[in-house]
Length: 382
Image (cartoon, rainbow, N blue to C red; front, side):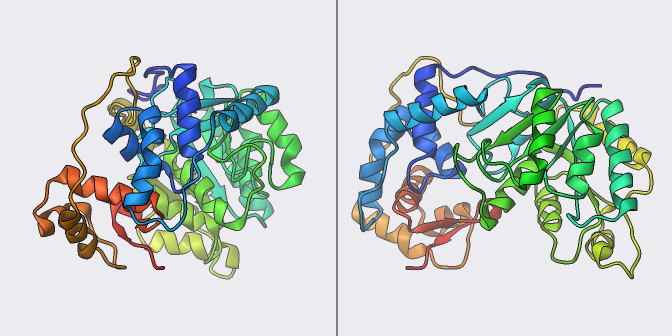
């Protein structure tokens, strides 16, 4: 079974482009959404890199922006090669197709293992680190059945439910989404499991640099990968403040199906999953509940062409002249600490969309803009 559009499509980056992309995403104040806007505006990562210092200055930065060097990028590429990994760009054939379409998809993923696992439609399975025996068994059953039905299972390599799902899908394909660099697995006791994943029919993915030790604030980014790669997310045992609920919220924002396994009201590990059911998540008491709900998604084209692609030829792209100071002030004054839609800024100011987007880029590169879910923006607090 193969989801329509989930095959390997796209255009491979040249090595020169790959270095430029890595430099751009590793530069100060350039996140995935900013990366996409820079590529779309300037036409290539090379042109965007050259523009960063001026953009930062026009945006009101108080210090010079750090732009990652060619040597920095080459060192990271060499580290990946020594580790048996590689970097895959969002427009390349081996990039997970469903992940391409989420807001703020990582422009580059570090990957290690069997790339075919990422090309198949995926089911996410997450839950409590302190899982019960029955919860772990149920997660493993779901993972095995989904794998046999042709789905790759993606989870976060955590203890408990995550580990049970990975182990049960080693033979059919599993994806470990990591919060740190590929060479910094967490928790340490799952290093052996991670090696089994990438030495078999699975793959590990990360958007973080090699050598990056995961911090608490990095785990929501890992959860974003899980929610973005999967067509549906199954939550098995999650407490009220569980990180699995963050993954479920993200999955809902991305238009994915959210499933929850009901549990005893007396078990704190089930309070979060029972809450999801009250909020409209699909109930799961057997694997068929998931497979039947996901089956229609394999028959439609879910994956429109990827964004942030560069042409094979590095053609110069004509750029709009930057707004004058009066226009820049009008755009900046329209912003506040309350998130707003960019279309509302365009309507409020009456200025061309290209001018508004360029000023937002300037503020972003200067560290003066916050991007929010749903494409909303606000001014950063000083």
